Length: 455
Ligand code: GUN
Ligand code: ZN
Image 1 (cartoon, protein in one colour):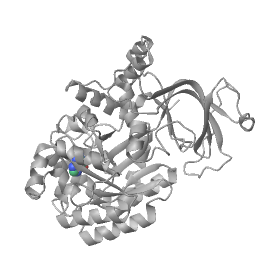
Image 2 (cartoon, protein in one colour):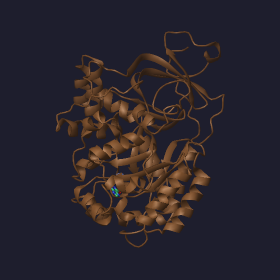
Image 3 (cartoon, rainbow, N blue to C red):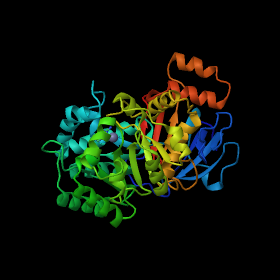
Image 4 (cartoon, rainbow, N blue to C red):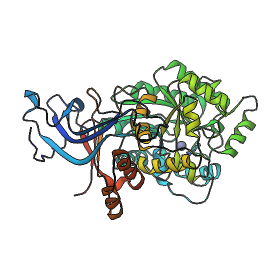
């Protein structure tokens, strides 16, 4: 093993790695083996800190992890080492709810959810009917995720089949784990953003046939939210979930009080907003429900029984004035909770910035979110909730080499503060609270560089 920094020759993006593609990453590794919960920081349950270790990467996957001081296996002695000592190596983040086309409307002023959709979002999404707009949008979006240290995502495109195709295609080319599906919406949206039940079903089945399980892609039955689907369309979506086991389901639920009221007017015989989905068979272990701020106890019991997850979207919930998600209650009720940017309702693709907002949302309710819990949630927690922990979310032999190297500090204030930290949690918490995408040094998807900070 050599200690000399030897930059890994980046593989061309999209090349399928073969067994001869070996390299070694050296640095301080942090990942998780279990949920730290809301235990105080010094308990650090579930966190795994491995200072100065080597990650042996072969054909896009982690082959082994070992202390740098330990001799390398014979076959690895001449393999190039990328030396990232002094940086924090984490599994790539998993963003469980984000809208690709909404990079066009991120940071739009002055409205709550329902006005925001009509004023900004729907007009922007209409442009994605154009395949060229969809393809460019997908590429811009994936590049942006990588530039924020995110390597896997559960994504909303638009109602247009081409927008889902474009995302599948771009993710497949990069060898990235992506979950998406064309948005279902057949009412209460402008011309150009509406589908119908039969055509939508055909489009979904075709996308499932061509993309679900191809490379690292998975299909999600993507109901925008209850108001924009007729009962007939929701029933069709439920049939798809039941017929194509292994597909995901993504939607929004109980985000905003006016939205909840509207849903109860549209579906007066449902017990609750969540029940509108549940009675059509949409809630299962692969259901990803964004927000879930205004759920009640019975709703949470339904989610727990099904093993479904809430994609907590902190910056969006603050920006759109939607409400304060009670994460501690969700934890007590045994729910899976993942973290999501929900761009463009959310104001940043950065999972760090979303963790900062998550911390403040919990602080307002008397709960303290540790850096352990926040980082677990954006890595192994999300991977587990998605049923993908054998593939992503930790730095473990057999997992894909979806990794990110982070600088501990960016700028004078953070550098000064970082130097004063007395223990690992303090350092991580300062990094999480003061850091953002400017701290990111490099991102790898399946062992290949997809982002490198400018020198
Ligand atoms: N509910 C229905 N559509 C959307 C959307 O695009 N963003 C958010 N935050 N909530 C929604
Ligand atoms: Zn959303």
